[in-house]
Amino acid sequence: MTENEIAKIVVNTSLKIHKDLGSGLFESVYETILANKLQIAGLLVKRQVAVPIIYDDIEFEEAFRADIIIEDKLILELKSVESISNIHKKQLLTYLKLSHIKLGLIINFNEVLLKDGIVRVINGYLE
Image 1 (cartoon, rainbow, N blue to C red):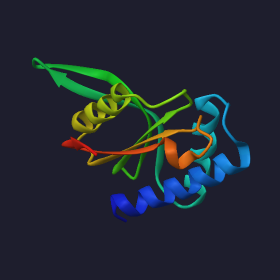
Image 2 (image 1 turned 45 degrees about the vertical axis):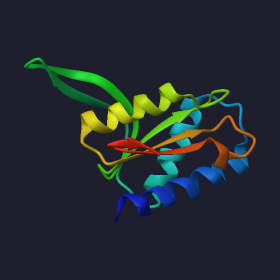
Image 3 (image 1 turned 90 degrees about the vertical axis):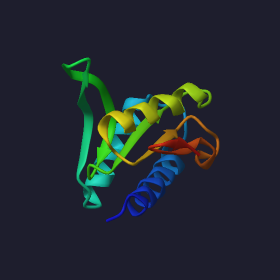
Image 4 (image 1 turned 180 degrees about the vertical axis):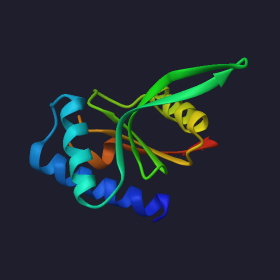
């Protein structure tokens, strides 16, 4: 399955969750439900993944925690904030570079229309 195929499943599942529950819940609630629904759909889902990095010849076991990594091909950064800012996009881009994953999605569940809260970030540049 390609990154784009996985992303399509994630977006469709997120849209359904948002339609059913609306906005205003904690990020952790959306994370738990989304991870569960994606696992039911047959995807390999890891939550709160500690990702190591090597900097200056020193390995750091937990450089950051990715909210969700799917099939080791897609990082999800979930938010429940007023709006997505450039720093959120740059943060995800850094996560992608450090983990050597090509595609990431920011999904902000605190939107009236969820489609307005979805941002694709590709390792190498911001869209």
